[in-house]
Length: 100
Image (cartoon, rainbow, N blue to C red; front, top):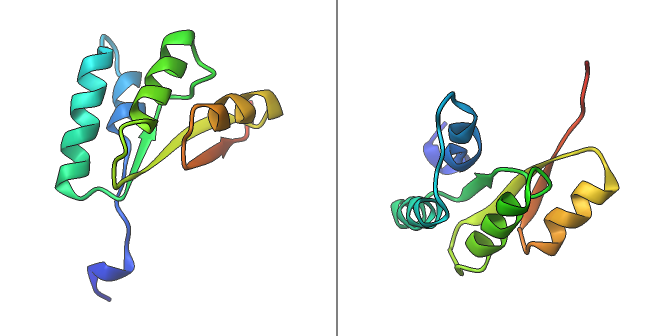
């Protein structure tokens, strides 16, 4: 099986922010997104825009960059969270079902 059967889903802008003491400024998020897009990443995952007003702003900002990469974000399985994500202009959402 060749690599042409796979897509790269890059999650630095989502998972990377979950590490202790990790924080990306809005400018760093844009720079990271641009570099990953130039590298050829097909999908970029962002922090849920429902997590905070800044996350929502950043999600909109990255979605508006006009990248080749598709922009995805995780949301809780709540219609309100999904609507917030759609309103930011993302290309898709990953729905998270809480189990605990």
